[in-house]
Length: 275
Length: 296
Image (cartoon, rainbow over all chains, first blue to last red; front, side):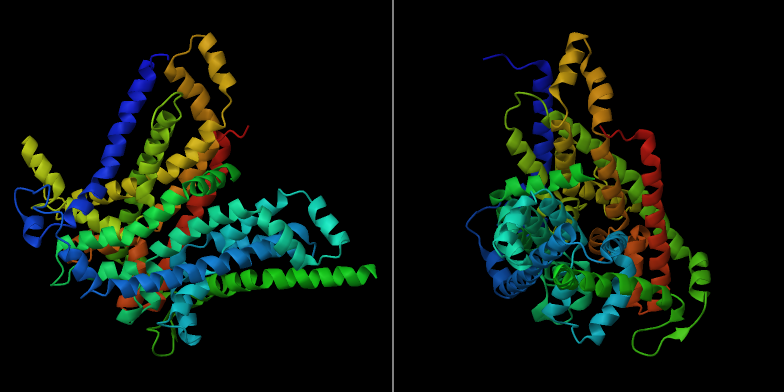
């Protein structure tokens, strides 16, 4: 075994320092979630709680503060956006990649325009639209506008373009229609791309704040983001509770990320190379 | 026979693209056009809009609060974007070292903050930087350094928000850049070794030029994300009005004018100016890329 070079040692130390700094906030929310209010605001700072078996904060979040309901809302919204987005975007991607139809390039370019618009510009008219459609203060008001996605469509189109055309031709000779070719032949071959984009969409919808903040009004329909933002500054809310909420709300996405890391990294890395 | 087949093909294509394309037209392009019209009116979204002509725009250019928002928005772009991309490049370069142990672990840890809700991230940092019982000042006290009150001084608050941005998104940009670095052929570095080039020569003349496509992509993304920053400002300014008034950005201003003060027309005018700024910056970058981006 060769001795590591100086460069390797320097880089390793540098990364170790950066990684430690990155982990400090995680460390802090976990230890603080077991603290009492008194321990949280004590001066000088208390690093560890007296007991790691103090689950009062967790009990309060899921009890008095209804976090189970917000969890449920978030899961409904997130899945309600991600699954239709993947299906509908891939369907459109198939048409753009494989079928020649009049107006194709104009429509495709017009989608680019939608990609460039900052959310702030469309916020107010879109809110008005949601009011008129009767979707204000409903899950559908969050879900429906978030389903159509330019990036997912573009990405899936790239994936389908990279598959050999002979696949569809032989299926076509066997009498398969467009939907059959898409659904049973091409889509299964895109599974890793679907996972990569799907996970990005999942994180994005789980974390979204601005749009749900505008659409949702009644407390029982709050998403986790809104619920957490609302905790802050309330008279009864203490910092130890906020930090416990941080743990509770972050765990699902951390688990999703760790399980599906490969697809995550693949998806992000590809987006950078494609440009 | 052939013509009929072609037409059914078209029908399928339109059917396939309809949900996505119509959805994007209804929820993105129509609101975009509509916001131009709203910006010429006074409208509180309860009564009928009143046509004002260019009044909203005239007011916009004389409004001192809009000027503060513009300055803050540009401050965050100018300070946090180069720091984010620069640090991501250094980290990606370190991760790209041969025979490095725990490479995967480092990458995972650095990316982890990206999946945390931005609202939560902001709150964690507000508590960590609390001037009395926060972790940072606790540590500074132990070392014997002065303990500034981070969240009541506007400049320090802005710096804390820059730190929050760095913590949250460096992992994301690092992965994009790292993917580019891993595509660089080892032959270049071997040739450089034979010529006796130092690590700096390698970095400056091989790594940096060949990573420019990824760096360019990161700059575009980071700038757009910085312009759009809303969640952090919302949380940091929520409980302290004085802080809110000094750190507010345009993205926050549009929201507040539209949904708190119910001035939809005025907010739309601000949104349009905001979009023009964001689009021009992106276009300028695209034109400027020929000067420094190398596509192999």
